[in-house]
Length: 143
Image (cartoon, rainbow, N blue to C red; front, side, top):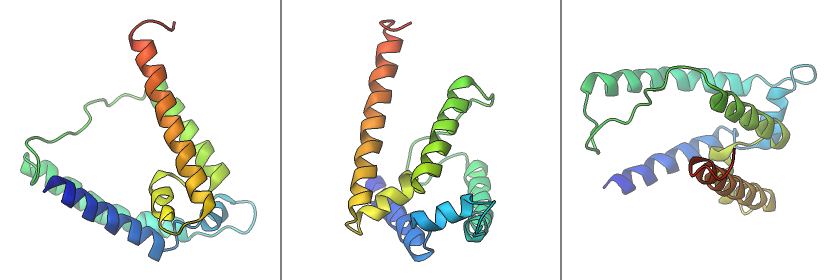
């Protein structure tokens, strides 16, 4: 049941990205081009998404128990650390260079575009490298 709910939610998210044209790298890059032909539509989509997201987050926190799981998994870390800053910088640089981030990249796979498959493959390689480096670091092989 949980996997079906995840599949439905992910599909709805992907459909929303495609319908709103937010999976289009050109639109994202136009949003990031504040000195050129800036396109504010991504900001409007983000602002519109904040309202239902905030309401849903408040509702989930008020319930104390999720609908389809045994416990809530809300991060307890509240401090900004080096890992967060580096991760945010890498994400932002990648987003600015490619005009797409992981969610839209997965949605773009359905279009069959070569770009989407190259980006998704690079994303998987990056995840595997992170996993490997983290594993080596936690077993104290790396300094």
